Image (cartoon, rainbow, N blue to C red; front, side, top):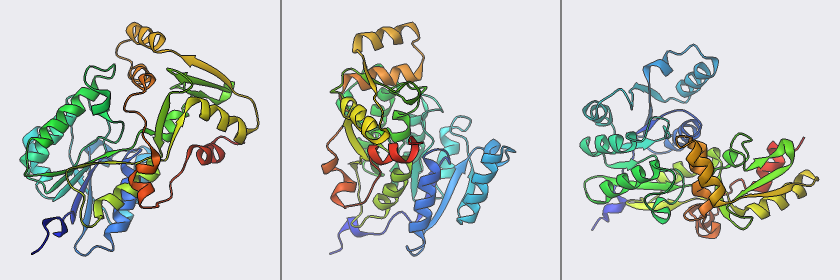
Length: 313
């Protein structure tokens, strides 16, 4: 008897978006697809992105075409569920890499289109934290929308789904505008406490690992897969910065009450929403040894390596 999980799927693949995560996913999925008979890779982009005169957009489109990836026009915001489902119906697998910029209603809209299209597999935009451990009603309201998507997918059995939890993007941790690490002023601003931990993974590693998960056999289905480039506390992060960069770093603590008060003064600020959630320390960090990449012995970039490559003069 043939095990259903060994039946080939993910041969006609559509990636939504070609941004910070979409490009690494496209590069790696296209590379792996060359060795999988009958596989094709396409990307869905807004018409304005396809025809943009912006140099970076033009470079991305040129790279996409050089990889043999077909470009499909679609708009997560402008298109209806029916219109998106019509686009999706030409594929057996859709991977969402468009991020949250499209708005809080978009995750559910895209998921409904995926179900309407009767895809074989759907990888929703859930590349982030463990929303269920965080729970409903957190300072970041879009997390509730992500939980709604999980409930929708679990309540049906026609479309297989895979959720990839990555933690925070590594570069976000070191973004001066976000404020957790301020290299210019040699400061680590710990969210919650110096003992609060955070899991981080580079978009490049997420791209590699997404392709591995996509083509894994027997296939992964109806499962949350955890990744981690590193899991560190803010105190450990400060120690690592000092060791790699060979200079002292001041340690400051942004307490939960301070961050909630700061958010209350600017309630629509996305960065402040994230800070308040990460400070609470729930669902934002997990044991690296138990992740997909660790179990498969797939090399990834840790915080020490990222600091050495990106912050050392």
